[in-house]
Image (cartoon, rainbow, N blue to C red):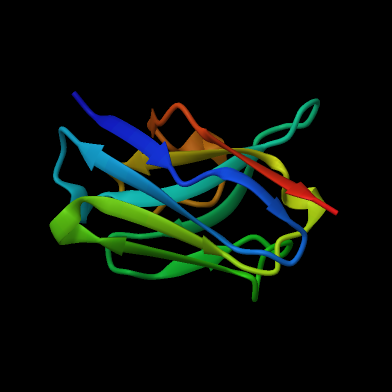
Length: 123
């Protein structure tokens, strides 16, 4: 059974940084594509960043230059380093996984999801 558990969310002032983590279990971690998504109240879930099994990354335009996605296969952990945070980054952040190598940064592409971790940025 695939399980994803996020952590690292919290409250931070604009301009600050946070690092989110997502620990996966129940599958061959290194072979999966992994992504971070977010959903603000009243808005649709949107893709933030994606890292494929070969290490290639994709970022949403809204976070390019401020966010870095990475993974540690030995620890089965996915990370999202977020810098220069803005109030519009406030959302619930979700980790997602899919066994396919070629996926796009859309929520419909991902099969497995974590429960989310809240990020609140105050201006």
